[in-house]
Each structure stands twice: as C-alpha cells, then as structure tokens.
Image (cartoon, rainbow, N blue to C red; front, side):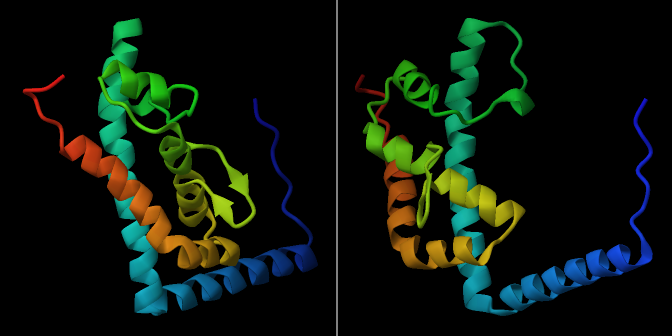
Amino acid sequence: MSKKVKPPSGKKQIDLRTKARNRLIELESIHKDETLKNMINSFIEKYSICEIVYKVVLKDHQTNKKDDVKDETLKVDMRQVPHALNYAGYDFDSALLDHLFGSNETVNYKSAKKLRDELMHSQKKSSIQELTDREQELHGYMDEFLNKIRSFDENRN
C-alpha cells in the first residue's frame, strides 16, 4: 500500500507552481526558435533511427540466448552493443559505438545516447548548447553507423 503524499503548504505550492510555469515559458521560448527546434528534432530523429536499427540486431542476439524477448525490454547497453553487432557480422570501431551508445557524461562531451536522453527528458540549456556546438560531429557518428548498416552487401560475408 502506498503512502499518501501530503500536499505542500500554500507558499511551497505557489513556489512549485511558479517553478513549473517558468520552466514551461523557457521551453516554449526554445521551441519558438524554428532553427533550434529543427536542430533538436533532427538530432533526436536520427538517433532514434540508429537505436531502432540496432535493436533489430539486438533482438535476434538476445533471442539466440533466450526464447522470448519482447521489444519493450530491449535496452541499449554498451556492454552488449559490440557483441550484438559482431554477432550480426558487423565490424564497427569501438570508439564510434561509444560515441553513439556509450554512457559517457563528460561535461560538454556526452555520447549521442546521453545527449538524446537529456534533450528528451529535460532539455537543459547545457544540453542544447552541447548539441549546437557538436551537431556536425554527432550527425557524423550517426551517419557513419547508418551508412555501414545501409551498405550491407548480401553477396559478401
């Protein structure tokens, strides 16, 4: 049985609602800038494609280990990424995979996955700034990954 949460006092409630409204105004301001909005959306969309394509391989890799694997249970984990891709016959550079799917959270140098997570769930100014600073670099990593998947030649091993 869950414990009932007691609402905060009137002043704390007003402060909380003010904080929520201010964050909403900040986010709306970000999304009024079409260039910024398009940059964020383009990055998130391309990363999503990378992740979805990777999960096709991961699902088969995991199904090989156990019978019933549900799509919603598949997670991107750098401890598995190289193994799953190798299982499918891909030979990706480990640094590229780390730039894409790693858990690197160094200030101003997050992996594409970590940056996508921040942009999806918090859209902090620092995340938006990092995307602005590294947009071409990050798209380059994603393009390299997708081009390798795309260039598969079924006549070669």
